[in-house]
Length: 301
Image (cartoon, rainbow, N blue to C red; front, side, top):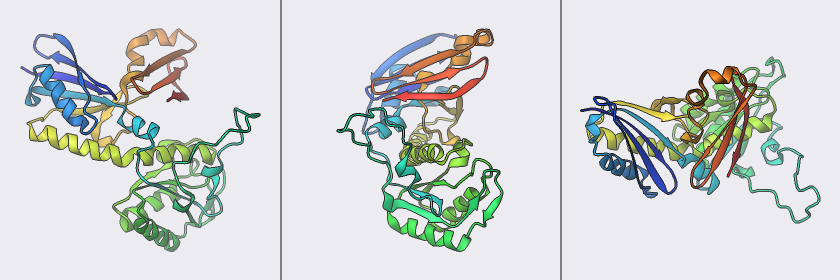
């Protein structure tokens, strides 16, 4: 016998769906999440479904582990590398303040301390043309400083990298060589959106939760392999679909998964659709236009 298993690890419960490849029978199970080691809850889920690990041909996994780390501020110490002269872009943010007349308002604490923001001489214009060449010597000095600082992950966001990611790619290569123990996220890999604050904050969140997710996935893969798993391991994407675990997904809760299946061809007939999902600790929403996902995404903690 062989099975396809889908598991969602939430903050309180771990939900299991088992599909028997031979009989097409589907069963549903629920076990308690084990926060100290979520992988143990997954093994408990397999047992609840009556499935041994070596019988699984496909394992699809979703978890809010990364989101929970963000909401509870338990991610890694994170740094930023940015264009010289733009050190405070992330800390300043935008001037829009919802409670305009609330004099007791306090800005939420930043995920990155100013002392962990580093500058490198380089500059592009809005078309991606080089105004100031990437200074590799200074980049190496900065990378060495980052390596000694205790920072576990770093977000690289250079001015106008949405138009030309070359300098960010060079910085990532320097960090990989000089400080290989530091996880690196470059903003142009995640978002080619203009405006530095938006790209920087996106990259910072990715970097902030990346070490924890990497550790979790590495441990889970080792546990599964040790019990005879030889199937395909996929992680759900919070925007829909799934990816290989080798792609190192971060925001992978399945609450917003399956819009294509749910709406099917009807999406082409409707001007827009909204999909809301979440779990015990968080919720999120994605909006979709005519047959194409919209970049307008909002989350609610």
